[in-house]
Length: 536
Image (tube, rainbow, N blue to C red; front, side, top):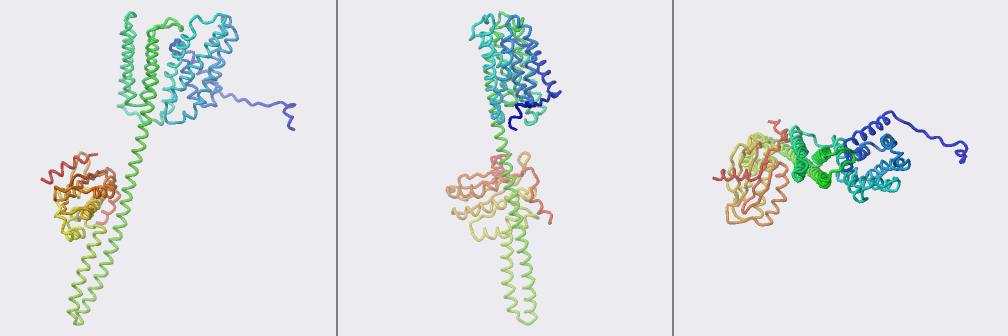
C-alpha cells in the first residue's frame, strides 16, 4: 500500500485565481512603467518589487513571481543574441525569490510596532540583488561590463536602495492607515505646504544651469528641511511621506538621455539623501514609538484616575447610607425617650423626667455630630462651607482649641457635590495631620472660583506661626494620605514651609456623586494667586 504512489503517480492540484493573474499583470506593468522613469542610480522597479512583497500576503507571492518573470521576459528575451540565453534565464530567476526570502526572515520583526526594520530590508535587498546581477554579468556576459566592479556595486546599490525607500514607506503607510492617528484638516494643510516647498525647490534646482553645480546641490539639500520638519512633527507618517517625495523629485529631475545615463553631481546628492532618508525613517519610527507609549501611559493614568474617583464615590455612597441609618436610629431613640419622658411627667416624676431630658439632649446632639462626621448631609443642600462651619467637624476642631475660625471665600455651590465632598475629606485629613504632627495654632483657608475654563477650589491648611516649618514626617504623611484624592479630582498637592496647599478642580465629566442631589489644566500657581488675594 505504501508503494502505490510509485505505480499510480502523484496528483497535484494547482488553482489559478483570476485575481492572482490580474495581480501578476498589474505588477509587470508597474515594473515596466517605472523602468521608463528610472536610472541605474535611481532604480524604481526595485522599490516596486519590495513594496509588492510587503503589501501582498505570502499566498499571493507566486503571482508576483509570475509577474516578475513576465516583466523580465519582455525586456530580456530580445537580449539573448547579445548576452546569451544562460544569462537571460539565470539573471531573471533569482531577484524576486531573494527579496521574498529577505522579507520572510524579517516577518517576526515586521509584526512589531516600530518600522525601522524597513531600512534593514531595503539594505539587504539592494545589496543582494546588486551582487547577483553583477556577478552573473561578469561571469556570463560574452564581454564583461566596462566599468569597475566596485563602482558598479556602489551605483546600483544606491539606486536600488533609493528606489525601495521611494515606494516601500508609502505602501506601509497605506496598509496601516487604519491603525494610524486620524488626519486632521490642519495636518493635511501643513503636509501639503511642506511638500509644495519641496517641489518648488526641486524644480528650481532643475532649472539651474549645468555649470552652477554648487547652487544646484545646495537647493537639492535644502529639500531635506521640509522632510525633517514633517518627521519631527508627525513621526513615522511624516517620514513615510517626506522621504519618498524627496527621492522622487531628485530622481525625476536628474538629467538623463537614456536609462543607463549617469549624472555625477546628482549621484553625490542622492548618496547624501539615501543616508538622510534612512535616518529620517528611523527617527520617525522612534518618535512614533515613544508617542504611542506616551499615549498608552496617558490613557492608563486617565483610567487610573477615573477608577480612583469611582472608588471614592463608592466609599461616599456607603458612608452616606450608614449616616442615614444612624440618623434614623437616633430619631427612633429620640421618639422613644419622648414617650418615656411624657409618661414620667404624667406619673408625677418630674425631677426624673427633667434629668432624662437633659441627658437625652446631650447624647442626641453628640450622636448627630458623629453622624455628620461620617457623612455631611448639610453639604448636599447648603454647600461645603456650611458643612465646615457647623456640625461635628467644627465641634471637633473647637475641642482641640487649636483651629482658628476658617476663612472661606467664594461660592462652593457652583462646584459639583463630588468635588465638594473630596475637598471636605481632604481638608479634614490635612487638619488632622497638623494636629497630630505639629504644635501651635492652625488656620484653614479656602477659596472657590474659576481659572480658565475650569471651576475649582484652593485650600490652605497652615500653622499660624510663620517661622515654623512642617516636619519631614508631616510632609511625607501629607503626600501619602492626601495626594491620591487630590490627583483623582484633577488637582495638585504642595507642602511649603508652614502650610499644606491643596488645589482641586472639576474634571469636565459628569461626577457620579451627583446622584446624591436627587434627594433634596491649570497649575497650582494660579490657585496660589487667588489664595494670596483671599489672604489680603
